Image (cartoon, rainbow, N blue to C red):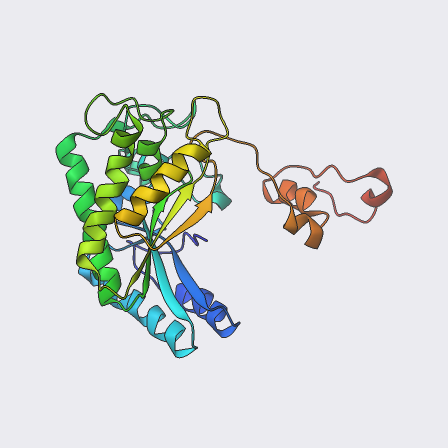
Length: 288
């Protein structure tokens, strides 16, 4: 889970305590949040990064502590694509539209924004695609150098790799668009490149969105084909989620078992007046 608390991609004491406490709490595998392979691949300016050797040691400190607690240190490497250059969730998560505000140009498979108010991305050229593939490999190399025993490719939730996979966001007519095989090419080339630079004993995971939940989008059947291809590319396990290419409904199950008033509290956290029932309203402090 992203903490949006890094400076220039560098992990700090918050990340040590946050991730270390999960290892202390008995987790067998602790995976560091989505860590950008390039500065432009960050969701927000506060994302972790592994585009520089300077970022290795702060993350190595985390890996050492996780391992000292008997857990396996893992890390997820990612590129946000057209979902980059955003404010953190507690500031609304909206797009940062200018360099003066701390934003940057965004890229994708095609020049299609995530939603009507989103930034319009630049479509990556084939040479730029190869540069991003190399960035994933370099981030994986740094991950291994930092002591991580599991590396996960973030190919889900509508971020850059997912933008190539889904026909809703990929309208290319070159070898990286069109057919299913072409749309999978970007991820498979990343997987091959990463597998080539990490130790054989390092586990390689891929997180995918199994379906877009939309007609004409990515499907379960596509995921089955992709799974076979990923295995052949050296991926050891698929971590499955869904959605993210287009704005979608959010379904909450287990958290509502633990906290039946979660939705009302979420309204308050998002700056809205919670719609408490009249019978409970007198117990709630309302905004003035």
